[in-house]
Amino acid sequence: MKSKPDDRRDNVDRIQQSIDNTIENIHETNEMIENTNREKNKDDLKAKNCRREAALDEFKSEIKDEARAKEKGYK
Image (cartoon, helix red, strand yellow):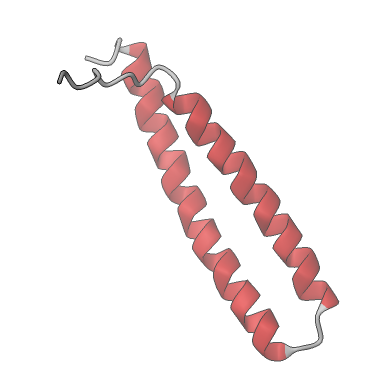
């Protein structure tokens, strides 16, 4: 069985979609933080958003790498 060749043409689009989804999740979680009175829940939600912020930094770095690779024809 032959494996599929690596097709990276849509990687930038997929990463951008992940960035958009993560930003939306951060905003929704911020609303949840504002609307809850339980400190434990707030702390958990804030921690989750911190992890999301870190993921955004990684996504942005990855999208730059993919954009450069796309410009070079993925060589």
